[in-house]
Image (cartoon, rainbow, N blue to C red; front, top):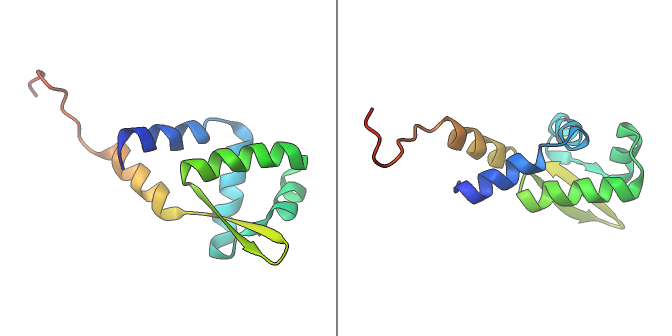
Length: 98
């Protein structure tokens, strides 16, 4: 994962509703949840939910797929794994000796 993608993912999670939304989708597993179910469980109005889902999908942390007339959202755990690896990687700044 490059730095730009990592910052986008971290930025997407830097909000209380989006963290709760991501946790809900992790718990739902690969099946994911429809936007209506997510809104109901989180108590978020649809327009606000759409805003938060957009941030998470653009960052790659959440995927979306169509099932009939519904959009189904799921957490992409491989992206979170890549983010954790990126954050845990050792980094040596140029010109600084260890």
